[in-house]
Length: 151
Image (cartoon, rainbow, N blue to C red; front, side, top):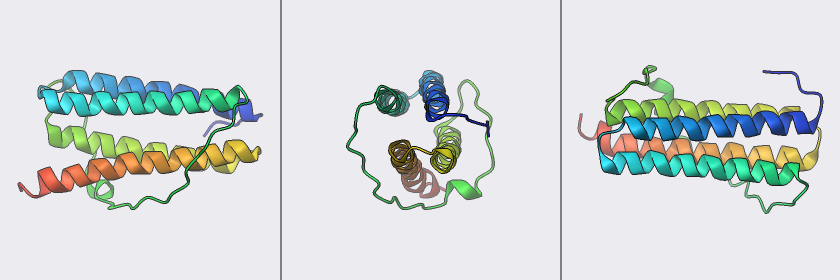
């Protein structure tokens, strides 16, 4: 991970990561042929944009009401092989990519929380880590209900 000198550096990095995540889900949605699947990934892009808005608000000095509720981890994504993102990929592969992406985002925010020296920033990153865990859980539940049941 990068070396950060200030809380602002950490926030700037996290903001750029959320922008990249929103773009990733927008592009993933565009690759889907099913309108329902497309809509799911467009929704995740909007959620990542919401994370960015929270980060920007903290950077601007605003206080946020954050939840640090712990989220279950089914660990389904931990046992799946990596999948390459490509046009026309199926729903199963898209779910695998999304689970792995959300797991990486959870780790990122956990690491950023550990690196932050500002208690408010630490709290924000811990809350965002839990939101990413919620995303991963939603993908795991979807995978369990739609993919594992069919196989």
